[in-house]
Image (cartoon, rainbow, N blue to C red; front, side, top):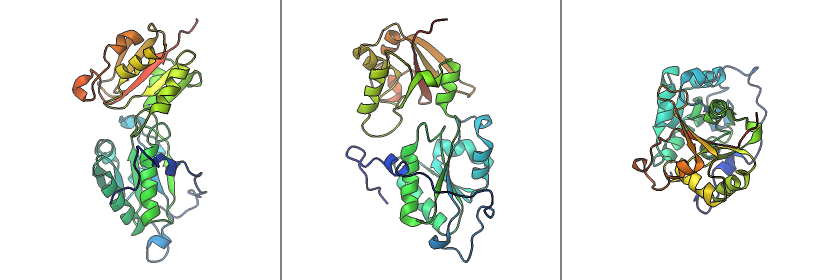
Length: 279
């Protein structure tokens, strides 16, 4: 199966996820997940599929509600790294994928849900901060194969929240932008340029073509103060967690390239650019 969108021309799969509010689902009074009326089949599948944000990878930050949705599933789908984080939480069949075989994995997932199995899709962090393209792809697969099945998002702890905590940067005084998505990000970069003179920035870079150094260089070209404090928060909550501290000008020295060999940072990073704060 191949999806019918082109991220350069649209529609972006995130638009499927954001097209309408979730339907009402009385989860507390419903029968235990996986118990269906009748003999199965797509028309009788009404238990929700869950899209769970698993947090930053440290299981201490996986919410109890998300853990239960994973534990109760018959089948769990997600990118290999994400599924590996939560594999010990469930006896479900695990469907892992990368970008190249994502569509095939989601197609198989939807077919199994249509056949009566309970399903959970997993994504890093919180899908509401970064991951709506994946949510949209899951929803699209369900609409094609199991159209009676609603999709419910279970939020997670985002690395954005953790970076805001580490950097002591209140989110209400910040502009958040995720670049961790496919397709054109010109509008997102323009939002950063418009905000950098007045607000803190919390940014999820895109591995590996729009990394912290590239963002710093862009902000300087947009007129940002070279002396602004820039923190690259790497592998938050993991044993290898590091907070790298620069001025914006110092960070821009790491601009350029589009591969892991061209940057000193991993793909598990958040960039924080701080405005001066008077004590």
